[in-house]
Length: 315
Image (cartoon, rainbow, N blue to C red; front, side, top):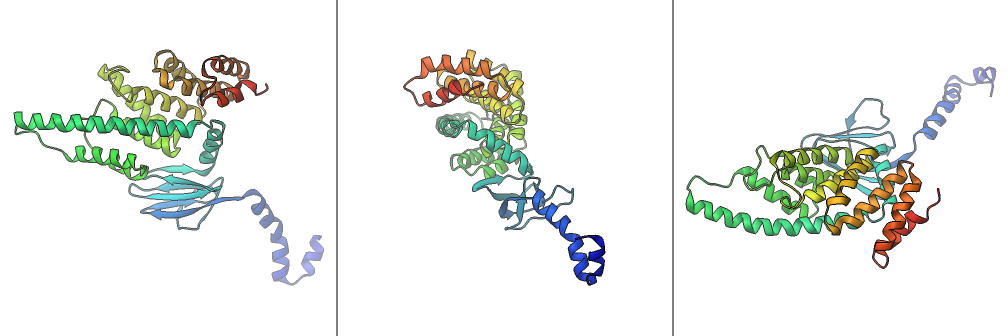
């Protein structure tokens, strides 16, 4: 329809006809990818990345460019592409970043089994540690009347319980409430648990920050892999978080150290991740070579299928 024809229409209709191309452009450029399912506490969102945030409500539509912000005591549950995402307190989450991280996760089919492995390992370690801690406290109370359980001790124990129950957002709130390192916490433990929680929820940039802090605290304390039970897991989660965040060089560096000096039970996970990192970084030949070599050691194991895929993918 030309401009002369539009001018002959009634004013209201002419306005709508003139506006139609703009409406079509918005519809094409902004495809709904999900919605906000629930909110708790202060939560705002910017649907179209305009820089203007409004209060979030259940049912609000989300687009790839949308951004969610939670306050110190806020959290949100999102449903995107049939998958649920939990946004923890005091977090800014970009939907585009969440979708890209999930895309990379799908390429690493074994990741969910690894996270479950870590969860079982950490939970069992905490039970043993808690028994030892309680025994240690009893001895201290007999020797000194000055020892008492602090509020920070309670927050740490509660956080461990919530992690075992997979209530990650609530566990993170407990950890954020800790002001001073609990007396029985290992060096870097509080920062590691924060990083582990962000890692488990898919917020890999935040995970790299806290895991890096934990690594620094442990190195400063002079402890090594054998003395800090979660130190090996910290390295793996840190390496894979860098991969999911797009920092392939750092991921490759950490994984190489882990493969050379880490425990045997984590080696197949580290090899799989390294092969995937090399492929994502464009070094497909080296990725295939690594996967083919690993097949010699892991045929007949649950890892065979994943190594076979990486070894057989064309350049």
